[in-house]
Image (cartoon, rainbow, N blue to C red):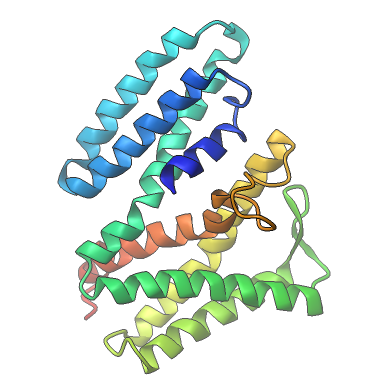
Length: 238
């Protein structure tokens, strides 16, 4: 998934249309970074520094078009953070958090619940646009419908399969996910709009690419990892 997502990212960035070697360098470096973060998360910063230095130096090999060299360099580094780092969060969440499997299910469920609630609320009540220049279909009614759906899902999780969640968890996870999910969706929409493409790819017929399916989950999964593994303990919850 990470390799496909990185490849799709190169089609929505200044790397679009560049040589296979330039794009392949980012894909390979990104996958290696994701594997390194998962294998030794305590050395995540070291891994990021090493890969950043490698990708940065490699750009000199592709510096044939000076007007776009800076943008391509920035896009390469953005791909490492946006795809490799954020997509590493869910497997780390499963492994490192207490009851990690349940937290992964919460991250998935709250993301899709928010998206579903936003869709139906937006269709029924949506008039005022949320971000018309980026995603004309999103409305404020849809946003608030997503907030309600996200909170309801986490509350139901607490009442059924994840009894160790607290009401504060419901508020913080549901509320933050309801904001970060649409933000992740809008970020990918912004990338697609800047590249003038409808979908990030076509690996999933009728649904687009991998990034089209996980754009919101990238942001929500990253937050839930930080919350479940670090922030929850810092707040003295559970």
